Image (cartoon, rainbow, N blue to C red):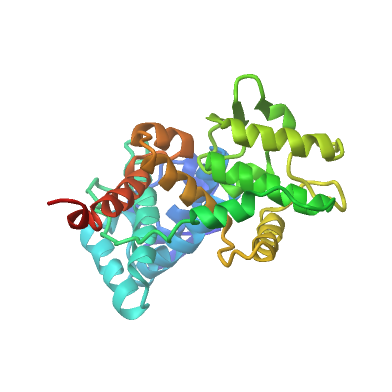
Length: 316
């Protein structure tokens, strides 16, 4: 439940009232506005995980604004810049964290600026720069060790082997992988439909022949479960949680003598190898499901830097 500012008094007001009613923006507190924003995003189908991150990133800003007795209509670019300074200097947030939080705050404030609401006079918000260093991808030797078929009949190891092969060869996110069903895969067309995505938008991704072969091997030896998930718990035959598959792959990698255990790093490795082998950044953006080219360009810069390294040693 939010609060409505009327002079020095605060009166209870719900997010639903804000969304439905024509209320003077000068009477709307920032936490009240954020409550309405969160409800609107849920109603629009925004994933719970995204809502949680909004609460972490925006709520602290909104509380700070309320502590300054600022109505939503009072906010300007300078308030966002002041908050950025507080995050850096007082709260000791790192550059990447500051950028992420300001990005969420920008989404919230632009929503408030929408002419449908008109709670806030429009102004532009520039995201702070943050030098994001991509982690070193899995090496060829490490991938060879991970992708070698198991030498035993342990069903869990075969599942982990198939999951590592699928993620490293398609670049899908962990959350998409654990929600993948056999009915989502078209073995003839070499594609699969990702129904569970970060952007909440379904899309198809191509599957290389090697990944398809491994999936068929896994399908042939794994039991047909009731729910039809590709990567399931071999003990309960139920859907795996992202954390459960993360831990399973961590142990699997270590058992193969590979110290890197990050599942997300498999996605990074796919993107890096794709570009190194001549793949186009525009196509990679679609495969990875990036809404904008910003993230994809980080891989481009990474590969470009790699190409420049030691160039003088190979020229006259």
